[in-house]
Image 1 (cartoon, rainbow, N blue to C red):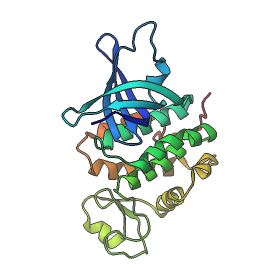
Image 2 (cartoon, one colour):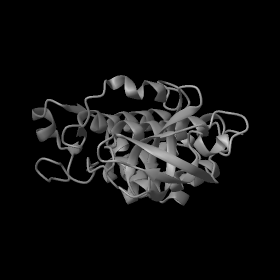
Image 3 (tube, rainbow, N blue to C red):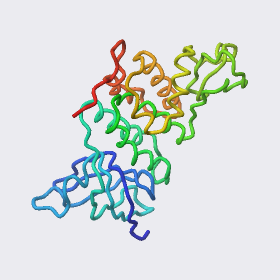
Length: 258
């Protein structure tokens, strides 16, 4: 394949051998791509460390081969850096981890790239990183094609009494269908209403959120995680690191960072 110049978000950066790094990128043109960037962990280096830092938005040339899962990265250049602090940083790294865990290799997904590119703006402007992450995660699940269906029972279509939720079905169920679905858990109308509200918010709307009842936000996040979990064979420990953002019985994430 000829070299491809593309924008990318660095999902993960790992030192490799003595002077190189392995990069997990989500690119505008190729989707998620694993590559090696050679000879940059030396002094002096022609490539600034910020150009391969986790979370960086970069422009890069990729030499990808159909015969190898590992591409060669060349001449990365920083477009922008997301440098939040505190809970904002935790929310950003959680989103990067989700994309790295659940997206397929080399499948272009322009809508998901746009989500990653624009998410730092909401995180930087907002006051409730956990709530912003929750809204972004709902978008992520929808882009992946997994749901979340929040209006009407996913089994029979009725709109009344949809207070059960199934990760397998990707949305809410009425009482009758929920009792028959082994994967379903009972939730509450308040949680479903919260999820519907967040599902319709713009990035600016997410950034304006100041407070959400912590218990409702945590339960809504667990339901979204159940949808993701159904579609992967990754052990459920992938969401353990979210506990600081969605604490059990806590007061919720109000730390806006630096």
